[in-house]
View 1 (tube, rainbow, N blue to C red):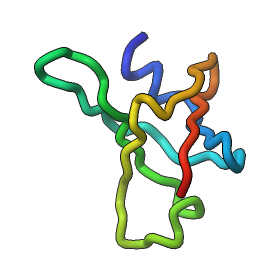
View 2 (view 1 turned 60 degrees about the horizontal axis):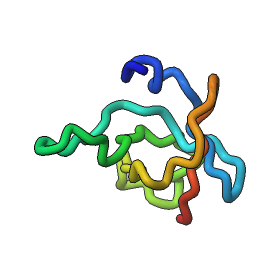
View 3 (view 1 turned 30 degrees about the vertical axis):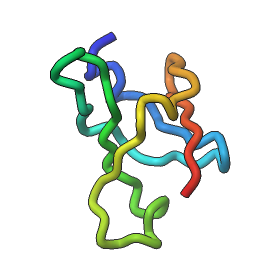
Length: 77
């Protein structure tokens, strides 16, 4: 799977069913090549309580399932 494939998927929080935002980048461990986290440009409505934050990270181990159209994550805000 390519980064461009991931970027086209919706990121859905399993805790509340909300669309979190769009993947704009990934962080990779330079030593191992493993993905550490997804960098997300949040939807304005999702992170409206934290207006100063431009984007956020979702740790790779928070991903529960990568489907055809969505990425399901389990995070608590």
